[in-house]
Length: 352
Image (cartoon, rainbow, N blue to C red; front, top):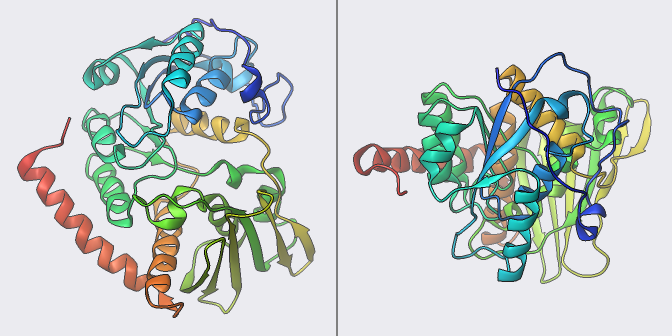
């Protein structure tokens, strides 16, 4: 059994504002013994550095203290929104946290027990996740899982084929209020409206890039089962409305102008409550570590695929001038496209 060697330093000021650290947080649960080593692919990303700093915090207790990020592979995708100065600073931060940087995916995968794919953008995620799956390593894939629904489905199909557990989530799923609502604090949820920033990235399905931070908490409180999706789009705003199979309505407002914030309102049989604002990365990191320890993803794959199908259906509604789109329609189309991707991988092999 691997025993973590704790090294590192305090978080820089620009990260402190967005990361929950501390030794008495309620989401840390005591565990009995060390579990294993983590490798981060795409460590030169905001999340790659932030999650590493939380896991390797020398003051970490309970479950956090049972794991360590020991190795990192750079985020080198041509579209990476990382300035050279930030990369040099990221190098320093992760090395101070005891992380060895390597230029070989195979070296990283062979040296660790668990893998986190953390590239900023989704384009490299398929080729970065595949060798980890082939090696049988449980894998966390940061949002967005991929730039398109067909690639998201392909990644999940590959995980199933290789018998590898996989998990992905926005940190907004794990706000304390969203979790309380999901666990029944309002009784049955009758509807919800959420909001988040939604800047667009031309290489990704629109909401995949950042709007997922509004979509994920919607599904957290509503649960899966959306039937149709309709999107109203303007230059600065999006309003996406889903109708669930049982007639409930959930909506997401994406903003590209004005104050950017996260939150929403849930309407339940027993009351009305806010869905909750961003509370830091700590709760999500602990869920990732619980996943690594148990091998059981906290979100069923079908729900994650429905979340991405919801966002793809929103794009299709935009293309159709705001007409409602059946979520099942876009999922079935993307399933066929994912099979074609997998066929190419079988014949050509992954791009390393």
